[in-house]
Length: 235
Length: 310
Image 1 (cartoon, each protein chain N blue to C red):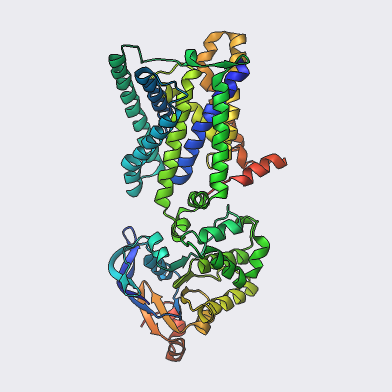
Image 2 (cartoon, one colour):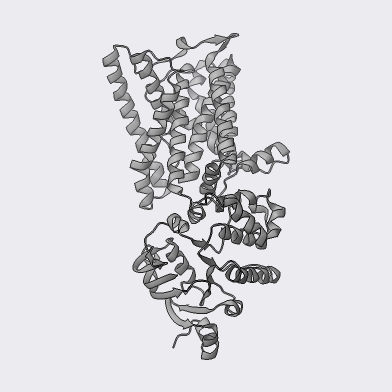
């Protein structure tokens, strides 16, 4: 579905990712873990075209999209949900949902209805400005916007960051629901490693911009290296 | 009479400030050539009058379009390449100052060219003799009030009722996220430069009905344009309108009263009033009047209605 080959990227002259290879299969959750500053978010930004790619290739369904512009990638079904600043705070909830359907033609209304069915709480806030929502409500809105955009691959950058435990559980449950019931492919960057491992089929651990581990959650837990890798200690 | 002049001036200033704010929000360019965009409109209007005997009011649609084209060309040929190379706001500001000088030279040369082919002086001109009156009031009062009302209605419908307009607002607030949503942010920027150039040219088309135009008029009026935009709140379209009427009325009425007290030489310093109001606003409300948390419902509604604070 999504393939990254020997990716070297960063911001301007700053080199962050080194020869990263990754393969994300359809209808799975793939977790990207690692210590702070290991390049997890940069990987998502590079795939989406928001970082500078120095070398390497990115393929979506066999088609090379390495240097395709972000708005064109969005039209191809690649959806990126940033960690922060992921809703338009000056727009109402309804306007945010409509903006998410910007690239859709006939089925925009159906997609908005689907998103509201998955996050029924949002129906109560349609006329409110997104800037007045709580952190958890904003995250729900951001995920609803991702659903509307007909994601083939949904890239979530720390969707549970700074949320209360109640909202963390709810968001994690929704991520699983998106995979199981809506057949989405999810690439999840998460600090909460325990939660991520519980729901993922495959895990990549990045340390200092390089892939330090690739395998299933069971393989990772069985390797005895989990804590060391998450602390950035590579043998 | 003096109130009539103040309202006309404020209407025209509002058109210029809306344009300036639009491009500042979408591209972070403080356009110091906005006044010269208006003078471009004045000279286009003069050209149609002198060469084809088209009344300035009749030439409004064409001048509006030509102003838009000028806005797009300036953005695509000069500013976009600089933005792409990571130019800072200061560099962009200096670029527009340079552009203002280039336009001044171009308009000066064009006025000579126009004089040569029409045989009529073009270095300074006024349209007042071509205006109509109704109930003792000048035509430009009605035309400018009608046009600014139409612009505000158009912008309200565009920004709040259309998919394209909501996408434009999204691009203004968070261009990065708008791109993520599949919006072509570059298209939105080009559109905002079209509107900015058009509104400026439209204002320039009407300005000669109020005052004498010379090629350097843009460099003089830019002081009031920036003062009004900053006083209202440079990130807010509502602020642009509030600031324009505050500065427009203050400049006209205070200058008039001061000239009665101290003599007509005060008229030369009318822009000082704008700068004094600007200084006071920056001291008391650095982000502009529409950012101040007034208790009155009217102002809070205005603020929340179109606030694009980054």
